[in-house]
Length: 120
Picture 1 (tube, rainbow, N blue to C red):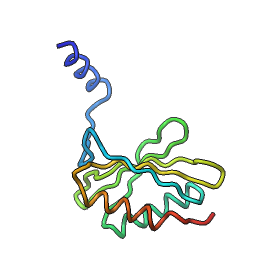
Picture 2: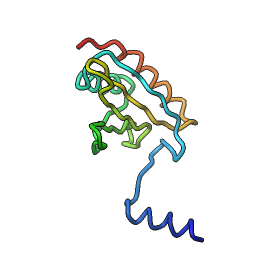
Picture 3: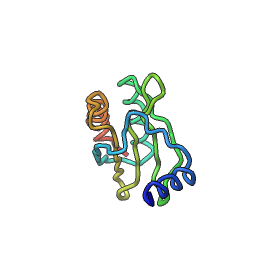
Picture 4: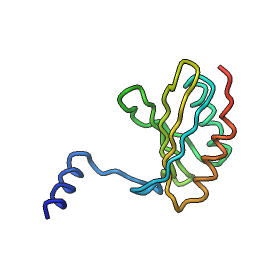
């Protein structure tokens, strides 16, 4: 009962969260890119469109992490993306997606393959 009360309180404090297709226990994939964050984010957005998806900015996280939702044609989240500067000339992106969504996994793999060699 105590755990249920804590979960209810957490929901009230944080508001309702739409998980979309991502699920409560997502798969994660990390990609590293040779390039500055703005160029990587632009490439990921372009490649998302090629996958018939849309990369929409979300509220940033502390520490300079940009957050995005990868949305399908019904505006439902199929993945979450967190982009951060890994070093002076390197950017990393962490993708979160449902383990039972092979289309999301393929889209993430394609985005990583196409954007992995961005020049500054």
